[in-house]
Length: 505
Ligand code: AHR
Image (cartoon, rainbow, N blue to C red; front, side):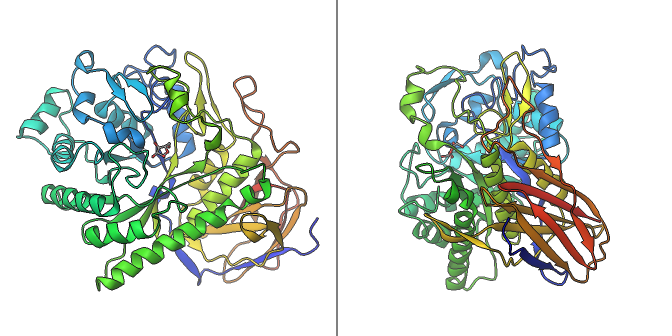
């Protein structure tokens, strides 16, 4: 055990900002088995009249996701929205170039909205338009079809398709990862800034209340990073509300210590994008602030994926098994730390989407015709969404450190705390040490807290433990004894490599 405890002080006078419920968003892409045999499987024993798997719906509700981004991802850059509406038997089969798959369009726009409505009122659409192979006109047509009440060709067409009520989509992404050379219709920053501005202006002409996300970089390591954001925002600053960020993490060359500190990169990415947004705002002498939509984040074993060749070997298959990562306890601890990073920046990160929701780098897995189960990463997300609502308190840790190859000296403790409306406080904390427990002392100043409601932890003697089809409940959070609150000090011991949720009432 580290002899020196990690310490911080909580004081309601020092806050970061209010958590936007959209911070707990997710992502459904037409990729692999996310849609087909994931959320939608008409032949499944649990399927409802719409073909949605009710076992998956229950898990999605338990996970507590809010905004659900759709239909891609790379998929959106070849998406023809009109293929995905109307009588199912008349919908065309199409080549999906992004994932070298065949898209049947049996699940489309109307089915996505029906899915969201069944998830519940907390689920909100977040729709991407195709700015890869298409442009302003098609974005406007989709917007009219989806949102215009009635009395025009496309809104009336929606009604004849059985959807009399408009879908009410407020949040729109202007394309996806347009900085990436892999993207169909990839553009330079100037080209994308221009088409994003034109599309945004036109979409606002139809409805000034839409909220728009411009594409930022696909990662902080992209060669065009920061310059891309600056150029795009120079064109779009007054027209958009958010700039997007995407980041995926995995251990490189077996370096687990650096992997455990992945949030160091995520936090610097966020802070660098905030700085770039504010720099452009200052140059334009604007009072407006651009917020951040971290609309793809996760642990992803990307280097294990053979790229498009792997998809090609499946010969334009329908819903092939792609990117079905099975997450360990180590992955879940890193994942929890990424959630902490998002909460610590809740003042500017007001939308975030866990990529993705089912089967594809996902917290929920399914078997066709078989069960659905929770991956290890399911638990930190569900707990953060349930208890991480309210005001984020400013947590400045004084922690013992360890050495990492990638990030130099890193704190062993990564933590945040959220104060609910009822005055209760939840501390989210990760111990990054692979071998040593970490004592934690939190001074509570000006907070009327008297009891530890629970201390839940995700940790395991086997850091490689996972939930699988054969053993779907191998890993679940457990209760930790001995955590106390005395004389205004919370004392706890965090197990080696653990994700912790300490609820104070
Ligand atoms: O989430 C998987 C893929 O990762 C998305 O399609 C793309 O946007 C990103 O590169």
